[in-house]
Length: 411
Image 1 (tube, rainbow, N blue to C red):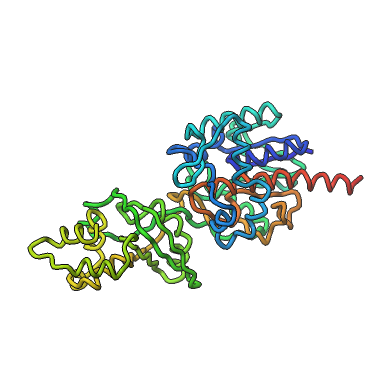
Image 2: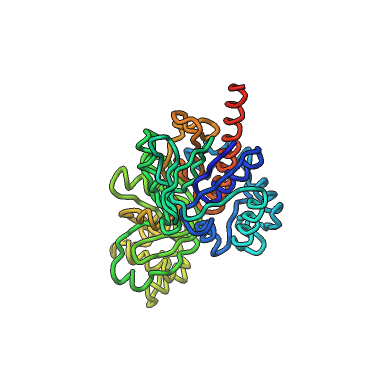
């Protein structure tokens, strides 16, 4: 059995490994000059492979796609991923936040070891081969350095990523190719992204690039669901991004899409209850400036103080009760998510209703889709990568199982 895989990210490479283990001959094609470019970028600041939190908590990170992702992780979850890495000679460690990293924090050694094993096992890699759909005979079409190429395969696995970081290969060019074949696709949208706010020139000039730590955030979805998280984020020239913003991004993005504007509520003093804060701020400040009073009585200073000045009216600033309420629930109006090309990952993609449990397109037997090109999303923290690995494994094993069944029926 001959399986062709298009896309050389974690999902595509894991699909290749699973297909090979099932006895298939595997050819993998990628448009870029080298494999795993986005994977290497993800590891630039330390490769966060997965997370060590309990399985039930882990599953909540996939939101309303939890039920679809759960079977993947049952087959190849965080613990299995760590064992797999160890099999490549890559030991892992758990950081203080519970995130799991290679002990050397790097992506390149893992990728090199993985590619070496795949090649030695028989996977053939074809670089600079850009997939262009199908010809009239149903053969796969590629643009290559040597000209057009058409080829047939017993099964095809597409692992083409989403639409973020197009310069690294995930450009969403597959969307019209599958749409032409009537495959249902939810529009690609930014996930793990920043948001525009519309700061004043004074605030932007003074605080762009400053981290805001530690804060509580509250976001509400258009359906009324509420997400509360704790963490930090960064002020940017255009708005906010990073850390805790990414975890609540789906709610914020959907609220903006539904109403035209999103609201993120910030708790700038998560370690203090409101009554205590009111009591502390009501203390006489005498000749002290308001900045000194805030710092002394509420431990609010720097960028947090700047956010209050930016967002709270002068009248509320002089009223201890209203100021305390603002510190505990400061409404930050968001105008729009940053563009898809800036996002870390993508929401939207091939709909699960179009796929069977093996990730095969029901209407196009022999065509499998996997990884980030499917309609799910997850925050950073190892959740995105873990599910991409797991989905690739499902598709690779699924293609082998489908071909085996077809051969037995034919016999």
